[in-house]
Each structure stands twice: as structure tokens, then as C-alpha cells.
Amino acid sequence: MALRALVTKKSADGTVSSSVRTIADEDLPEGDVTVDVEWSGFNYKDGLCLAGRGGLVRTYPHVAGIDFPEPSARVPMIGIDRVTR
Image 1 (cartoon, rainbow, N blue to C red):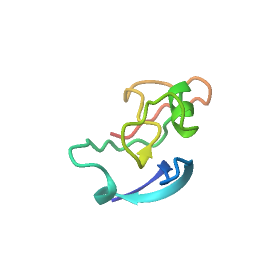
Image 2 (cartoon, rainbow, N blue to C red):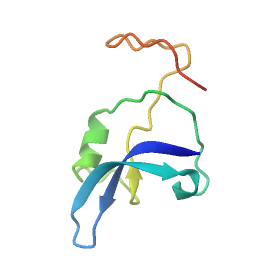
Image 3 (spheres, rainbow, N blue to C red):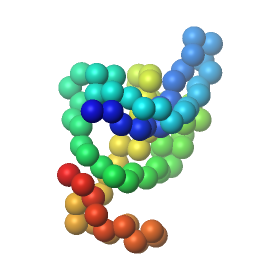
């Protein structure tokens, strides 16, 4: 299964760049858990990771937006009820 993700990379010279890419399950690190989520958000720490700040990313490439709501949660700003498991 492929998924669209915001992927952050770090080049040999230390430059950090991010782009939306389609990645396959095989591209994910060994031992990760895959959860089917239709919507995700970014928080302050995600912003630091995208900018290469804060020392939060241990390995690159890094996929931002790992937080997701409970299936029964409601996203009040945009009114979305459904989250796919």
C-alpha cells in the first residue's frame, strides 16, 4: 500500500528539505506500526523538524505528522467526524 507523506531529508552538507511524496510500505523503517488515517495535523514539534531545528529527528528521512486522533474524536476547526482505522 502506498501513502502520501510529508518527508524531510537531510543532505550530506546538512541542508534539510521537505516535500510531499508518495511512499510505499517498504520505505518505512522496520518495526513501525501502520495506521490507516484519513487526516492528520502538524504541531509545533513538526514545524521544528521541517526546519531542521530542535534536534528532534533521530534519523532521516523523517515522516512528519505522526499524531492522530482517536476514532471517536471530532476535529472542531474543520468539523470532521470520521477517522478510518
